[in-house]
Image (cartoon, rainbow, N blue to C red; front, side, top):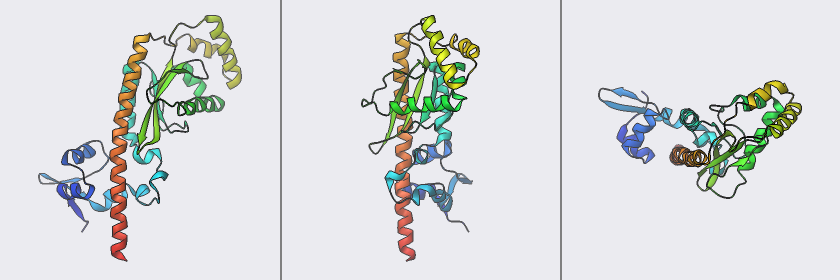
Length: 250
């Protein structure tokens, strides 16, 4: 018969409180079965769900996806993007997307559909990791739009970033916009008329709105960071459990 754990036994095993266990159940990080009015958890399933981390040799070798449950990240990111009226995604420190872009504008979508445009966007996202300050700071991307990042750190190391952007902070000079669009269209082999039409629909956000976005962005990143810390701690405990199990068999 499978080794089933009670909620209290799982608490003791993972060294977390009952509320954390129920929160993990609710967001899908662990699964359990109801036996009467009580929950039971498979020890084998708990350990296998973190197998990629338990089998690793070093904490520093963890990938962002090891500690960031993307099924939790995506819906929060989507809600934030829609409320803030921006495009948003989560990336690794080297700029590689961990999620699809939520609420992306047509202008950026056209650029991202091309290989060269996607490379240019990734390079811009990667540059955000080089900012020394923790607080989000809006800068201009390769396509002339504003964007910023909020850091997600685990054990003092940058693990991922939440990015928000795809807007202007002031109305674009039409002649400058046309010249930039023409250059982007040529560089990434995009129909210039289609890109120009998409550029005309880009949002212009006022200073107050931008400041709000920066604050919301930090809160979203802090939420992801809290989940990542909790998951990383669980991985460490499971690794110790796996090591002890190996020793007991020897």
